[in-house]
Image 1 (cartoon, rainbow, N blue to C red):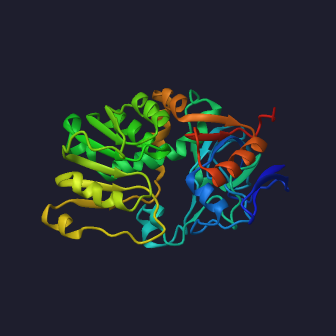
Image 2 (cartoon, one colour):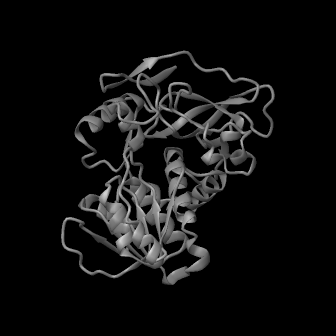
Image 3 (cartoon, rainbow, N blue to C red):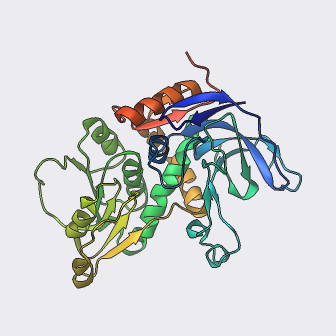
Length: 342
């Protein structure tokens, strides 16, 4: 089968590798769509904390079950599914309590020890499989995983339960995750949604997804109104302090972006104003179910966010280019392995 290999020289290329075979409690998914994430670009650049080339990357994926192991039940060949790409230990206190997403021994799909979804087929444990509504198009299946990240971030702030429609939200960063957080906010707990994002092409997408205002952070703030919640959706260290500064007393800051260095935090403000600063560690199965239902209910999310649909070979070229030069006009890159290059 074909798979995209990340090399240590910062390039990606499609190579031929053996097709995987399932173990007793494993399944093989024929990949219909797989998305490129910021962590993939960081890995190819050699700057990711646990994805080290050479490897087959990719963890945002959906497809069709093509084979099942001898001990697999309730999953059949031909099922359309997405993959929850976490392999926890399933024995620690976190796992036993249902919080497997913070298991300290957890592995993620697309590392050296677990070949990822940038391939025709991928092998995963049966417990990672999540069925999806038939109404989600094949090319949009890969969007369920990053949408689950957004759903988990919104759930961490406990917004719908405590504030409802009068809530004022601030999203700092309007890239793929910031855009999907905007979509989840608009769907679950609508109110005023302000997104800080300098790129006009992203601003157009954000407005389609429910942003009531998109502001260029390089310009002076149009107003200094406080927000009940603020989501840090891009890895710029100064934004953590900004998010805290712009929250109301008693508000919540949700840290979503990944930082590879320590970040200064004004703990005095957290204490005196009783602001909650909460982290997000991926998602759990409920977030995947929420994301899949949201995508089924609002197909325009995929239409707005997915800017590039390419073959696996074209994806290797695009990922190499984006890693070296930046995203340009691309918001979300989706590869469809079954599609042939032009």
